Amino acid sequence: MTNNAIKNFWANLKREKLLAVTNIIVITVSFLLLGVFLSIVFVSQSTLKYLENQAQVTAFFKDDFTEENILNVKEGLEQDERVLQIDYISKEAAFKLFTELNKDEPVLIESISADILPASLEIKTKDVDDLATLASELAAVDGVEDVKFFEDVVEKFKSVSTVAYIIGIALVVMFLIISYSVVLATLRTTITSKGTELEIQRLVGASDAYIKTPIILQALFYGVISGVLASVVLVSLGIVLSGSGLFGNGLLVPFLPNTAIPFSLFSAVISVLIIVSGIVLGYLGSATAVRKYLKY
Amino acid sequence: MSQIEFKEVTKKYEDVVALDKVTFQIDRGEFVFLIGPSGAGKSTLIKLLIREDVPTSGEVLFDNINVSLVEKKAIPELRRRIGVVFQDFKLLDSKTVFENVAIATEVVGCPDDVKCELVPNVLNMVGLLGKKDRFPYQLSGGEKQRVSIARALAHEPDVLIADEATGMIDPQSSSEIMEILERINLLGTTVLMATHNDAIVNKLKKRVVKMDKGAIKSDKRGATYDE
Image (cartoon, rainbow over all chains, first blue to last red; front, side, top):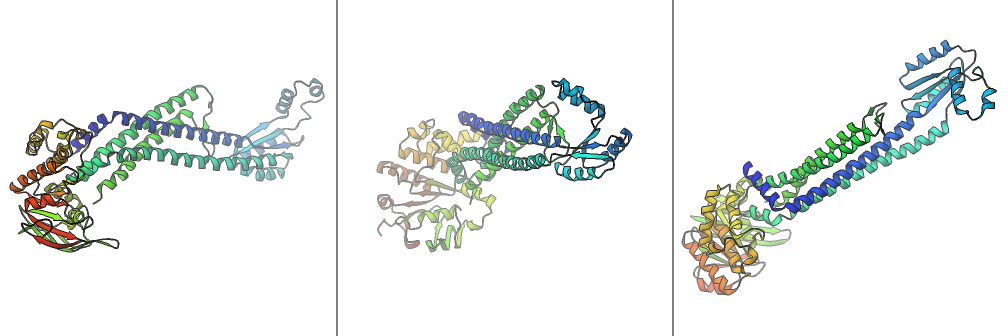
């Protein structure tokens, strides 16, 4: 019966070449749009995550607080699980930065020396929500003269990025539903167009397996071929974008702390998702559509 | 012993009673006309026999097997023993006459050599061997119905059911179809034919089961349409 099913599957495919090509094009385009859309949403979420990670607290130290003491504070903070990154900016480094920022104002540069500028620690947290607490904790640390933390900006960014995350997830879910619906509708239409043939097969005594196996094979074929074609395009796109250096440091994974993956790996993951979708949708779509012709 | 037996069969579709305590038997090799107006219950009766549907109560027996209790996986086997010819032919326009008949052999996994021997035989029986490569749209209504009969015969069924088989064809073609059905019956196949065609019933003078409003009104041998 398996040989018969494969034979019938090939016979159907050869007889319906144009339909097969059309189905593969429609499903490939749906998968491709899904892949591109997922990539856009992921990249934008990753960018938000990157910007979020740039928010920092700066603790300025008193002039009489020695570099050794500051480095001790730094060492203590490095043990803190909330801290993502911590940089020590010495008086000299601060002056160098100041000089660079004000290179067009020589009078201003001449009037200031490295001694005037305070040494500081710039602290980034894994979670932007921890910035405010950390800022107040730092203010109480011995030797700290001032703590700068752009609370308003961070709060505003937090609310904007939360909305962007929610919209991103909603769009992904919506586009998954749309593209999956298009694929399922395409497969169902193909099967419904064979309704009379399936009905006749049933009336002349065909077993359920005889009727449904070629249909399921055909739908799986459409799903897998389309998934592979869409994946080839997406992976190629991923390789080109990775090569361009646009995502040189990789993409930060939203909801995972400090985790970055290369763009090409991201494309590969999306491709696997699409091929698996092709297999699952092909099987489920055809098995459920053919069921109505097998009712007794 | 009866080949087909309906015992107190009732079929309801929600509040509509399609069959009401129908009881009758058909012996092996009989030719039976099932007559009555539209909605009398003829098609429902046929559906129950080929297990397209199950009765609300009562039993439908085929060779002493309760058809409604047949397991799902055994239904195809039952349908191979009961050939059905429909009013609307149920042919595939994209397949030739040969291919349309061959469907019946393919579904049981017949090897190609058996198919190539069997299909021409049944096409010869209905007088269409010369048109085996034609498509349905190239045939008359009567010829299409003959293809449908050939397909039903491919399994060498014990029973042939003709559901309004002459309903969409001209009198001359109807007459040819009846000749074929009679010939098949003479070879030992039981024939059950649901029809509105009084001329055919009157000409053949076979057993006539008359139905109305889901019940059997009369059951006579050698009868005419209005008896």
